[in-house]
Image (cartoon, rainbow, N blue to C red; front, side, top):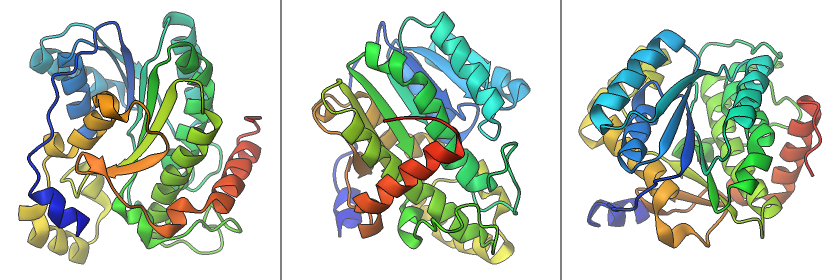
Length: 298
């Protein structure tokens, strides 16, 4: 019902300005990440596009500058499948940037064949969850010093199709690419929830969201029947600009200042699955993430 109601609401828009704000967006060289960058650049923010492929990143940077009319855009190398790259990126940000007001954990891989990250994590949980967990951890002190600040993590309605398999988080016993994707998106929702609790009173707020069914590069690993279904529903899917609206809403909407830890869709609060509200699993996932990344984050 919520989705149907949201169809008939007028489209969200905001004239909110972001002068003197610095924004990091992961996976900003394509799809909704790039559209988010363009919108926030138009609002006057300094944009740091964190991209794995620097050639594509630089091309996207040119487009962001052209379409936003802002020159205040950087492209930096970040491979979320490699903790060394994440540490190097965070070190450069912490050294060069006096503030970080908005972090958009947008990059993701979707239903890819089984593979492992440089650190030995299954690719989808590795990039979508562990990579962003480590990145956020390494930038959190700068973000706190920049408060009021926001951390936005792009999840998906797919989070409700799976659970967190704490016994086999890296799908080593058996791999189902759809389940592994759903698990990683549920991890995004639980991370946002846990993070909100730890950041109470700091002026830093957190949000997870479903961007809508968006036609993007993420579809490249779908099989033929899945692609056929997507073609059938394509009149109801969003382009990247429409898909970016909820990310932008979570980044700038003033009424969200006092909200933290929630899940959003179609530029409005939405219901996540019961598993997405399970604080016991959220805590276990947090502890396991710290352990697997060899870090302490109280």
